[in-house]
Image (cartoon, rainbow, N blue to C red; front, side):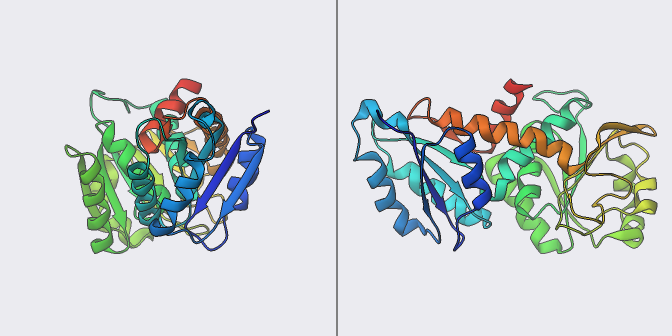
Length: 296
């Protein structure tokens, strides 16, 4: 019997235990884990995946690309694509630090209450706090791909500009603007007009850091949805609990990290199953968003 083998290629020195556990729970029977993988090393590892089984059996081998450095994982993904040829390929899932699956879940949550879909009218205005981190980058990219007007916020304006440029590189017609954001009341006051007109506010900053405090949140009078992706106290957005799931709070609904995480896990497990269905499956952020939408 041909076993399902998942080859975990991680840019970090130690491959993610979280990703390994989810893979096994999702149906991977054998897990081959490699840490500190570079683009140069990836070629021989991919060759090992595609040349050891007949073409008809390649759907039983798959590759997971992970790690905390989004740019490094993207470079790995590009290398893997180039290494494949003809029928010599296996299913691939790209999910650096869970960024793609988490961002997909967040965008789906927002889409339950806002026109976050291609051609949505009127376009959603989104403010993504901590947008230069792995999850924030992907949230901004997916929202932009759905036609939202996205403000990419970071404590460093150069980093925000770089993140916005990266979004535009993937989504050429993206409406994506960088914003300098230091957090708290002072920052909220400095960009009050932006906060006031945002339909959607997503906090994707570092764990345990409040990105939007109470006075700042009070300025967001147009916001219909707040999503906090930080599960570690204090809240990334004041007043949101990790377990909040579409909880009505004044004129808006709020989502916490654990509520979004439930859908993220569904997407993650479904993605592992999908890359074993056909050898030509390649799941990056956009494909994971579509997969998540099919689940709900």
